[in-house]
Image (cartoon, rainbow, N blue to C red; front, side, top):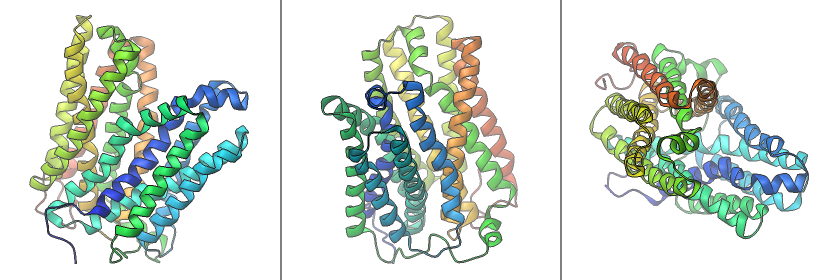
Length: 403
């Protein structure tokens, strides 16, 4: 029986820790890239493909895991995946070639691609209906925390010890999440990751116009955010003369804003319809990007003003994922929750790739146009979703949830 108390259960924080582990592992290599390059005797550009391969493997594997015709408890799936994830990171201690490292990154990504969608589906399935938004936001806090704490901590560990210690840190995070989940995740959470059904039966809940629109919106909103975030360092340097040291402080501030935005989003989703929360977050995001575009025309501007806008931008950007996930889950129902979260997780990586490409293309024209490109993508996402949300064909579970 699901708890109706206001306190969030320990297992929910275990799921957030699992999300923290896999997100940290995704980006942690960036801080130790030069040291890895020196070890494997390759350029940093070639070594950087370890990041690309991880992301690509995740994007392809998440839907693959979700649509395999198997029946396995979410609890067991998480435990197996986190075990493989930890082992793949610890095994870095035993290898010193590029090919071996690439193999281990693929294994870690395959495991991570099962962890995050399953964690989100488990949180949704076990949440009291009136607190689903907050439960999803708690898991998403793990992703925000990885950017704010996990990646800097891993980089520091690599600098103090060596780059292999950074991967051991990632493995320890995975093991910590595993041990906490084993002790706390309810055995009643025995819902299958996937029922033993035909592929057509698993895909059918996702084949409607609103689900397609939500996936397109996910790609566009992530692309809008990443178009700016990818090139945030040169933009801030140009608009306020931000140095690398100042940038580190500003990124911590923006990370704190992201944590606040994620939690606020969860509470608003539980009080209002998720579509309204998404619209509000998108509009705030667009407003901050327009403000940045305006500041570029009158640069240089005080760093304090830039810092305030960064916090608002981050809060708005991180308020979007829980609202989109809630929209998706409301449309497909609990039976297809894992498949929906897997496909949506994959679409996030598509959006990240698109955002990086758009941002790079815009920079070739002018660095100051990056915020305008971000606005265009985010606003296109907003106008794409609104007509679909008004469609009466969209809500099999909750007809009363409208934008």
